[in-house]
Length: 418
Image (cartoon, rainbow, N blue to C red; front, side):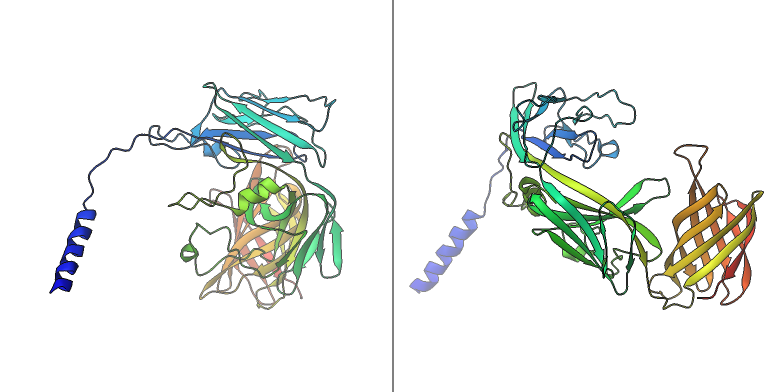
């Protein structure tokens, strides 16, 4: 009987403990957030200054025009400077960063601060000191030590290149890409794979980092990084490949300082707020540095699909004689369609062309988009869609469409011997 009474008393106590009253939590004070990675390979450096979200101010992100991540709550009117404390006679002095650089082509947005060309001075082993002071008197400071590499190398099988150098070839089906950095001063190595887009820019893709001087990337590796949204269950079942045959990629290797390495390898736990490694004083974020080198990688593959191989596309288009070869590869075939890509080389509408083109197959029907820069119009790119049947060993006629999908002519597509 006493045990039953004790159990009932315990239930009553637990029930009382679960009755919460309503309490208004005051707005938190904002915390300054600074994001800056100094890169000697870039003519101009930039720094983002913002505040944490407190609920008192609506986010006003300027992400579309800011490289990297746009500020949520931009901080304007701050005094931002970086000094090389290892260089007594530094001609740059304490470099001031400005919100209005008045230089054509530079993004201008609230919270984005640009340094002048060529400053601050950055040499391997030098210590840079950051100082940010807001109009309200809040101050953030931090330091970084500039990394240095005597050599960065890409290697595939027995072939290697000192970066930057000639394009190296990778067979996605059998090869492994290796990046090796001869470290003079630094903490970790990061590798990023990107590729050109139709407008002449670059599409960032897979990236990874290691606490070592060597990274190995198998040619058939699936891209588990780009689709990741913080939850393994959110990853799609059909991850895209890091490397697709028929494309030329740009591989960038970076040697980073310790503070950048800590920044990318840590994160905030949503409930406790713990886990993020912060080295700034008076705020949070990152003030780090890296040195980089980039190189082209031409990706091919085994010819294990009947539609893969070399084609010749020729004839007259828009009054111009065109003649290009297509070195075409397909992805793993689906039920009735599959992605493909091709190296396009020869003479196209605006003269010589040497690009990668993306497309897809539906059974034996090919659709391939070919983009070409117009030499007489800077920053202008024309695009054409080639669509039609492919025969195993014959010449067929394919239609050509412009970017508005209006048919502008036809060409002959000829299958060449493997």
